Length: 284
Image (cartoon, helix red, strand yellow):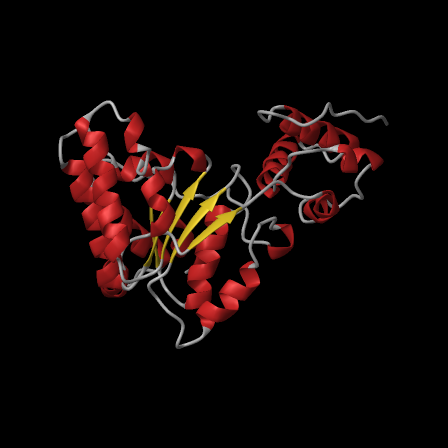
């Protein structure tokens, strides 16, 4: 069932119906998955749903670099009397674990997850984006689920820079629902500076996720590679746990486990970042 949870984000009631269909057909997880896929296509007018984050690294607290004590938040929200009207803005570079922590927090609280990308909600038809936003919040309330908005900067862009009236009404719709939603929800963004100023008071917590520290680089290496890292690892800058996962997949595809080649690929990832702090250099 873990694989199903990673692949599908349908409402619990729909999952329950799919499981009943599988039982009637004497089928297993494959049948459940087929039913959920069919339901998702029907809801999208015959189009396949966007793929889930299969390649995303699972939550690894030792590789988190945030400006807030995440463990303290988890401990408090785990309590039965913890407040449920709570919201988070998680910002930082791609691959730093924002969405992974949001899903981890939902597991800590014991809530299912409904995850929406901007592309799931934004429509070319006037008024439909607002309807999709309202529907997402209503679905989360009905299912008692934690709502996660990825790419939130596309949904909450600064209205002062808007060129079209629907861009303003879309942000207004988001802000209205955020103000009244009674359950936890999370917005993640790589571009927090693009958010509308009115979002400031809509979030209980604004948490920054940043690049790995020098001390975390060996931990990230050990989580993906069996060989000890070369000496030059500590010279790398602006890397994330997602970068290590990406390089690990690349090297696995190439069938190459040479630590120096791995380090070279990590250096390429670091050098490609906008605003890289310093040149990367190392030797064999």
